[in-house]
Image (tube, rainbow, N blue to C red; front, side, top):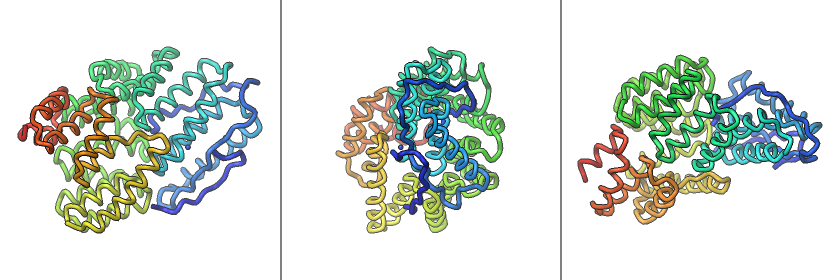
Length: 409
């Protein structure tokens, strides 16, 4: 992992952004705590500083912490700082540091009995977004519904509710919320939700069309636009359109150099195209930019395929440390553990243990049931495999893995 250089704020130290908001009326109340604890800002690696963007982040961080040092009850500034943490988590991959910090400062604002309705809505919506990022989907739905009661005609809160309902397997509800979201505000966020829902319901071409609209409605070079482009590339990659995927990933890098997720995705495509040496080098390039566990997992899968057992085991040690850091900071990684034990370590018992934990949380989710199906197939339990496959395929998804499973079952 990269060495982390840290800069410290003037206040005491203390951890997707789906929705980032800009302005609301501030609150100054005497009931707030006398001192606010804030997390330190981690120095971005040189490759992802992006010039003025990193300067702006540092300036905003300095301004927010100075305001809170003088006015610890300024709820508007608390929420702005939380949103800064969320963005930095996405850009740097330091989820375990920034997400708990964002939750802590948002909860600090929410306990203020004199919090205005506008500020409460903003804090709740932002908190629900963090809970989604931590894979605490039931909590995100509860928080999001509380926010929606305050402002039912806000597009962003509908986006949070779409995501939470999708992850919990409430697909019909998610479609209705997505329709309402796009009717309120057709933009990068709403088109992205339409795209995902079309894909999981088997309309791959419609999904590509909607995600292309999402990309076109974003600002070139912005992180959220790069993320939409990455998602578009991932759709192409998943359904075998590798040249189209690589083209999109390279377009991201033209606008946002060293965007680590695009670099890592190019490495994955190179491996799929049989360029394993090039793919290995590209994945290592991505790993040098940020410590994203997905890059390490892709490389471990390559080493397993090539029979490089010692190198694979060394990477797995690092991966397990990274996952533990995430879980220790409140990030639910059950499905990630299940897939690792299933596909790399080939420990079916441990895979099922983690998959069962997630299944108990969201038994209607198609991705969870897909993993449960894979485990049942490996255990040669055809009856159980059929049960889980029925749910995994209930939305008529055309995911390539489902087609393979159907043949086996």
